[in-house]
Structures are given as structure tokens and as C-alpha cells.
Amino acid sequence: MSYTAAQVKELRTKTGAGMMDCKNALVETDGDIEKAIAILREKGLAGAAKKAGRIASEGIVESYIHGGRIGVLIEVNTETDFVAKNEDFKKFVKDMAMQVAASSPQYVSEEDVPESVIENERQVLINQAMNESKEKNIPEDKAQMIAEKKVEGRMSKFFEEICLLDQAFIRDPNKKVKDILTELIGKIGENIKIRRFTRYEVGEGLEKREENFAEEVAKQIGN
Image (cartoon, rainbow, N blue to C red):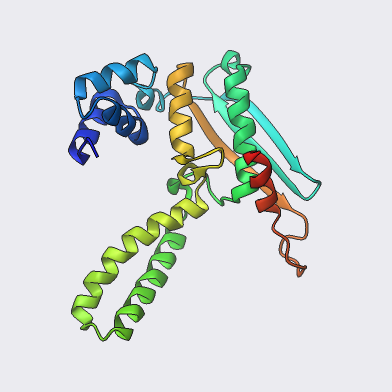
């Protein structure tokens, strides 16, 4: 690795670019901050975070139906109607509809997850970690410290499962959806916000034979 966590933080502070973009730029420049800034500016990624605070009330609602079995409606907003007609933007929205179909997130971002859901999951994970330590005869005081460390990592995985922005992008698993969004904001020059989505699956909540329609969607996107 040709960069440090401190360098990534510094580059993000100076440019407002996404974490993965900063990491990639530092790798490309062998840790040279100034060269990394130049690369991010050339790619239009610098300043993307600042645009994220601007009001976005235009946009489009996209639909995606997979084999008549899974259906998705998603709303993605932009600052102007002009950008809403941009081909890159429309492709992004379509990809997001397919992402929701394939990965079945429950929320757009971590901020949307109710505190009660977070605390319940955290407690479950703490109990799991404590039980793991108990099986290894680890003293309770030490087990508590171990549990806290384990829970942080496991909570990150929890958010990656249920939050759209934290999920691995189905077309490029090396990037998260929020990284793709940041790249698009930098490229287009306007704030873009995934506002909401709804996902339907035939027979959802009813007893049925085992079928993995989400896996079918993922395979289709990968082809």
C-alpha cells in the first residue's frame, strides 16, 4: 500500500472526493498528495462532496421488472431537469433499479436506519461475540473488550447488507454504490440524490418453494 490513512483523510479534506477515489489517486501517484489532487481534478471528482449539500428536487422515477417476478420503482433526484435527461444519469438510475432488485437493500443510507433497529442488531452481535468468548473460556472483562471490537466490524457488514449506498456495486464489486454516485456527481457537476425505492417480489412473505430471483438478476447484470 502506497498511502496511509492520514493521507487519505487529508486528500478527502482538500478535495471532497470519495474515499475510494482518494485511495486510487494515492496509489496511482505513489502517495504524492499534490499529484493526487491534480488527478482528482482532471477526473472531475474534486469538490463532489460539496455539491452533495445542494438542493436536488428534479430527477426521474425508474422502473425495473425482472421476469415478471421482481419489480422495483426508484426515485433519483438532480438539481435541474437538464441533467435528469443526461444519458449517464439515466444509466445510473437504471443500474440502481437493478441493484435494488438484485441486492434487496432495505434503506438508502445508514442515516435512514431507525435507531431501534441499529441498537437491536448491535445487542445481538454483542451477545454473539460474548458467547463465542465464553466457549473459549475467555474472562468476562476481556471478552467484553473483544466483543466491542468485533461488533464494529460486524455492524459495517450489517449496513452493507441493508443500505443501498453501502452495498458493493453489482457491476463492479470493488466499488460501493456511494463511490459510483460520487463519481457521477463529479462528472456531471450537480448534486444527485437517491431519494427512495420500493421493491416487490412475487410471493414475498408467503410460504413458497426456494427460489433465488435476486441471484438471477445479479447474473443478468454480470453478463
